[in-house]
Length: 216
Image (tube, rainbow, N blue to C red):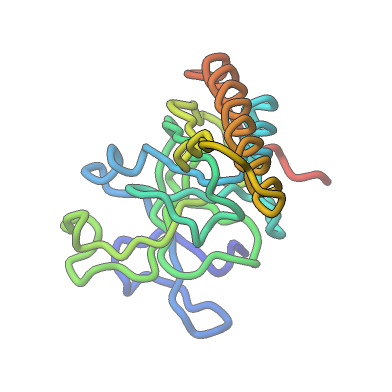
């Protein structure tokens, strides 16, 4: 986000209007919210999860190459796949971004030093974030921009249950053969994926991940 469109603000009156007329601003996330916003969830495909766990890096395909997360529950609408859930603990600083941050560059939040997690809220509650309970807040998503670190893996797990091993009694008719073989293959492939993920999780647990710096 362009720096002329964003500033630290203690109230809505201190906000800056964007080119669309919407008020957008960034300020430190109040302390009473930080613990529940430190646990970040990321849904992805199995193959992307393997790449993330092996490289210790995570990024998106948006213009800014930022990584998208949710807080509280997994968000399939933010993900390109929902085969694996990665859970991270963010140990940097937290900013509340009020408005729509996409497609305008990387924001900054005066008063906070990098690394910073930007928690996006469409708007503040009437009481302000400082006095709001979690249940009163309209939360959108969390963004980590390129160069962000202090992200530590705490879990990685397959979300879908293992397919049952197909059983049959007696004859398998020709028209049943393909389906039967596909079921066997699904069962075996799930086992392979589970073993791969368990091995990578064990190696990566508690290690630091980062969002790679954007190429110049």
